[in-house]
Image (cartoon, rainbow, N blue to C red; front, side, top):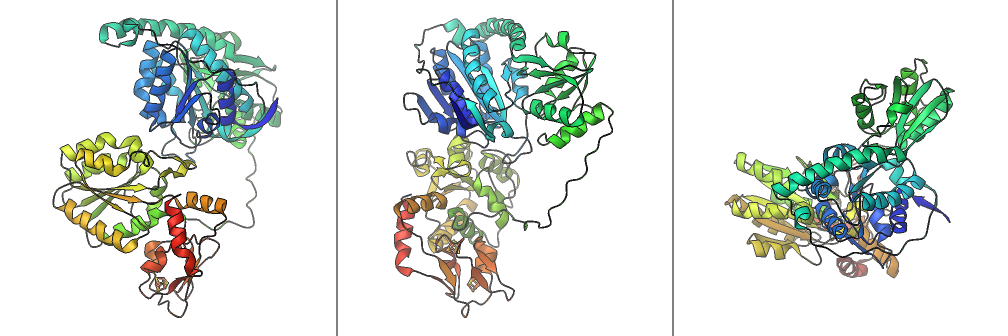
Length: 595
Ligand code: SF4
Ligand code: SF4
């Protein structure tokens, strides 16, 4: 039966048709819909894990016990899971283990553009690379079967365009979940050096086997003097670009890009053009086999960003000496206005940043940020660095140790806190690093679509208590108290101890969804123009996106954007901001806190 599916949904349905029983993942664009889809199937064990390492371990353990299991994440997540990922190749598995990563070329929502396929080469784990949703379905299914038959993990690498395109997919019904039973095998599962050395030989043996298996995922189509080798979404671009250029070519479609089939030398001519998204992974392997290539290495196709039809048409034209240069696309007559990064109107993080800004005024502060929606604090000038999950505390500790003149305020969201900061809390305490740690707890993994956060079951303050880190809990919508407590925390950290501030209020978007469901409309706020003295505190310091500076410097609130948080009314020193429906204010704040 055909369904219109996202590539990610197709991956989930492919795994279901292979009888996946256990699945875990950590949300991250562009991968989140894989676990979201699997969560609908209550006869399986499916979880959001606290991070990608835990997700891979959960699936890996299940596969050791003979189950068919899947772990899903975005590309950078595999860095977090790299330890168990590499070990899984050494122990192998008993059931099937499919690890799915969605790469994000052009960094639409990521801090780097790394190509996961290198991990396949490094860890001796084969990589399947679908080019569209139907193939994603098939490869997820085949990947689990292949993993089980070879007793070896398999990596499925998608990219944004494959994960997020919607296309008709022929779906087979889910197969019953395949759980298993663990059998003891110490020599295989305990990777002490003497066992690991034996296992290494087994890994290499399987790798050779995989080079033969890889041919099953390779196909040759078309005829012509030119040969194009293409993988992933690059295959679709290559087909269309050749058609547009009117070039007849043989296309070697690579489905398993790592390891490349040895048989590729039987089907390619002396020189090939290689079209692939990401790094030159297929091209590098072809060169190792002694095949001359024109691809990314010599600059025929761009090495950064996503592939596009334009890039592939021009790259092929250059490689084939056709001299085709596409005309620059016409510029639209109307340009959208620039939209600087802003937190959502009423976002609790807006109140937290405001309180911290006031509390830190006049002091030398390093704002050590992290990855999540609160990275948008860049707009308030309160993000001096944000490099990876957990960087706020990790790098912040190093800065605090080396620059004694400045105070480090490390801001981290709740999901990132549980994902990447717990071991660092131990270091913070044992090394007595004077730093203010701010856990911005909006009780959801908000940036990736509102997945549940562990903060409700394991509140951050309980962890602080257990470790012995002094801490305070604030509600950022209570602006006055938040500023007072933040000042106290900063003063205490300056006296030489780490202090934590847990700022808790649910994501306003989740609260709005709950309000909509219950038929409640949050109050809107407005500016009493006569009272406004154009001081700019609401639009310059609080920086609510719903508030605009008028030509005379007075503030104006766009009622279509206002989410009724009340923070602007609290910060206005001239009492110029009022709720249009005052009787709704406390009910809304109460409903919101329960979202
Ligand atoms: S804080 Fe009050 S007085 Fe100042 S610009 Fe905003 S509305 Fe006007
Ligand atoms: S109440 Fe004020 S601060 Fe809150 S969303 Fe509306 S305009 Fe923005």
